[in-house]
Length: 119
Length: 114
Image (cartoon, rainbow over all chains, first blue to last red):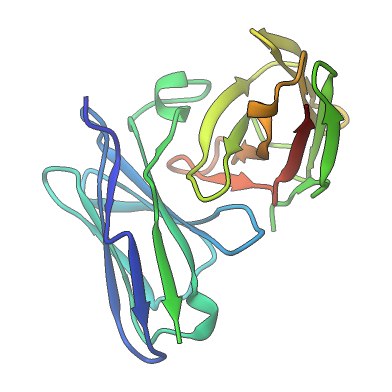
């Protein structure tokens, strides 16, 4: 059973550039959430995709955008990179469509992350 | 702004002792609460979830929830060196939100000393 995969593992960019990160969810999962984790901090929610639509968005600027494909894989795009965008970017997959107190939809499986360094 | 607060530590306990990790949250509408473990250089993994007030036990782990006090804790009994990691408290946003948005604390670093 394939777990959550992310690519690339590491990435170095310069300020002003654009970057695309990729995520494939765990087999059977249809929901992908993206998080940014700065050093020494907890993950910060960027947005969530379900049925190819952005369903929920955290407090991140429009420079952060995403996409979900019919096979449920997802991309995170960041434009006009800033030094402060340097972080570990985590993708988490889960089952969507659940309600309150739904263990299946509440259980998120994280990928190994992409370490982005902006110089 | 929904906040989840944790003592960043570091927390050190001897092997075999009980480690107690605490978390408070600001949004009274929060319904679901989670503890993740994150080893250095790795991604978070879910170890416990709790929905109702009271205690929930799973092996050496016990999660405790007090919604009136907006307080969640994690107890690790018989702590082992392999428990040394950062423990993240996460709260699922209130049910009025669409989708599942989770708010994480900054994590508590735990070191179990052999």
